Length: 137
Length: 161
Image (cartoon, rainbow over all chains, first blue to last red; front, top):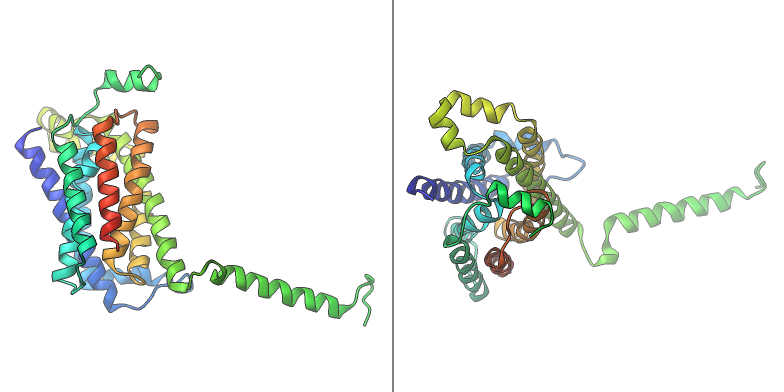
């Protein structure tokens, strides 16, 4: 793992979280979408918050695709899970939602989970994959 | 009034009234203690989980085939690295599932808060992904990663409260 790779993981975390919060902010302006008016989910893209959120999520996807080319999915997922904490914090400060003690406990557990994988190996080698595929491990 | 088929028309009407009522009872899911908002919220969470698990596993599989993008970029240039991704069919199939997840998220967000929707779908996706990565990607999901998955899934479940 190089500093550049850690930077990519950091960018994925921030882009995904901020993108989701932007989408949420935009959807608060629009009404409920039902199966009867599902086409609204496409016209929702015209809302500036949703549009910027979508652009951020496209950036997230580009980083994610790159990260999956040099690290395992089961490494990338927990390594970028600080994003959930970021969503919680942003929804408190930006969208004005309330933070409870259980939520702080949740934040603590997520952070612990990130610590677990951060120090471990990030990639399963081709040889190891072969052994796992053959059921030898 | 008796029809040519030997049953009373009123029986038929009663049966069709009953069937219509049963259908609306089943569809509105009140019997599960769920209202319309719950159905849309949890329905979209289920679709987000399906879309992102399938999408992420397919994109990861595509990237396994292509190899380290950083190395490819250094060896063959940015254009070739992008071309390698764009011409990989599994990548596009993955994007299709990610799009399903994205539109389900938009519909879900029109019914519920992001602070419920995102952690709830993420914690479920964590577990489904760990299982799918082991089966389809043959990743070494060691004790450390299982612990991380359980910690993070538990943490996001608490965040959703």
